[in-house]
Image 1 (cartoon, helix red, strand yellow):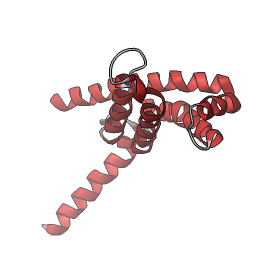
Image 2 (cartoon, rainbow, N blue to C red):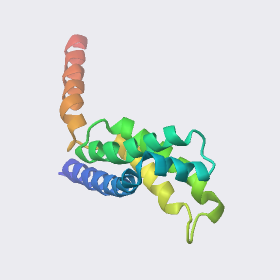
Image 3 (tube, rainbow, N blue to C red):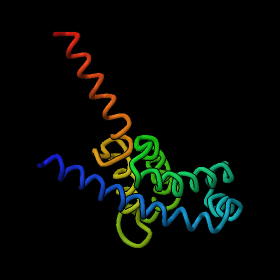
Length: 145
């Protein structure tokens, strides 16, 4: 019973984090790679075009995968990189709290990272890889018995 609640909580968390990142990604998508590159370049972020492509890919494609529960660790790491970059390049001078503060960005990045490695059983990753792990574990137990 408790494990079902954990899985539902992980799903709800993944959907919430994924929707927030997706909303930011769709803004960048509409701005385009050039406009996003200009924006990040004006903030002093190196390799603005590469950064723009990375941001759009993580925040749009990654968010769709994250909500579905596919490639969770990879997307979680992408969220952490994206969020921590935003903390250090955009929000750090504004402090932790208040207008422009980094508290929300930090929480989103690290929650995405945590859910990337603990996405629950209601995910495609669990359906594909969780069953393989369980089968491998059962095989290993049979071999040691």
